[in-house]
Amino acid sequence: MGSLTHEDLHAGIADPGMDSMRLLSETAMKFPEALSFSSGAPYDGNHDLAVLSSSVERYIQHLRDSGVPEGRITRLMFQYGPVNGFIREEIAHMLRRDENVDVPPEAVMVTHGFQEAALVALRGLFTGPDDVLLSVSPTYVGMPGAARTLDIPVTPVTEGPHGLDPDSVAAAARQLRARGKRPRAVYLIPDFSNPSGTVVPLEARRRLLRVAAEEGLMILEDNPYGLFARDGEEMPTLKSLDTTGNVIYLGSFAKTAFPGARVGYLVADQTVSSPDGAQRALAEELSKAKSMYTVGTSSLSQAAVAGLLVDNDHTLRSATRELAHLYHERLDTVLRCLAEHFPPERYAEHGVRWNEPRGGFFLVVEVDFVADLAAMERSARDYRVSWAPMSMFHLDGGGRRAMRLGFSNLAPADIREGISRLARFISDTPRD
Image (cartoon, rainbow, N blue to C red; front, top):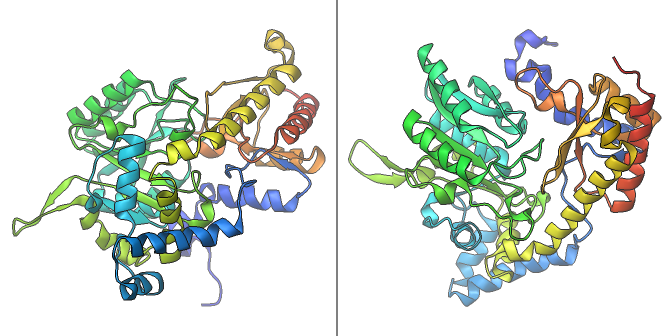
């Protein structure tokens, strides 16, 4: 059997929609001279190889200072470690300080980035063909992509200007139940959502928690950008507000530390009762799935992240303030440049508008032509500026006339030049 067709492969592999991130990265490599608004990479100007090694050393010294025997430290660094990770206590300490989330270390699983956390959570919660995942749309492709690989159906819930609307979640859940399906969980990024940059207001968060309890839904809360709010505008996580045990919290150090570590975490403190009456945290039960996916998360990566946590007294909120201000400056630069090239009062003339997030890494620009991959490649090739088609992030066929701009890893001067190039591309593209 020397060759295969798509029919020979799992539907999640054959689905063209699963290929969006690879296509974006390949376009960036194909046109290296293009200024890229298509990426969601964090700022990399402060990465230092010396810090990498010193963070590992810092954690090792922390273990020594804590009285951990040298032989055990050596084994932790070089051997297979606990499936759920050995820096759970450090992460639990950070969550108490930064998010007001008070859980025991046993409720934390250290994962290979967010993506493994998503896979593990979905595999544990979804038990049959009638179980359905609700997801905000547009959304980060990682969660619906994970569901697709596990044959879990996804029902989109279209977001509004303030993110996911709780009443829309309740309506979608009831419609599914009327069709004999079981709405099992709902996924969202409540703080500066990828791709739209929306923030769910405080009262809507409380209402969503009530809806979850009433409808028997778990909430899968993804929070990569919450620490980058403007001073005085920080919002409590759904997990910190949860009093009924309906929230599983999915986190990552990709944006707050560095993505190359590939360290994330899952927080699931719900109690699971076994047939013999024993009770364990859901995170511990889910370790059975993790052990089959990756066996364990890299020891050296865990040590590097834990060293950063120890060095910053287990708070990244204060440690990332300077970085947050940098992102705010870049967001403000994008908004200012867009307004200069496309004055809002002349919208009828140019047909371009955008939303104005208060933070995060992304915003959305609406245009009056189809902004698909072919248009993006033409933009990168002929105008030397790239972006991401919003249609990649919609689960319901929307976003055909919009583009996501990611600005987190572009200096202000590059942003100004990039928006100038983008303006020329938009102005030269016929309206349809």
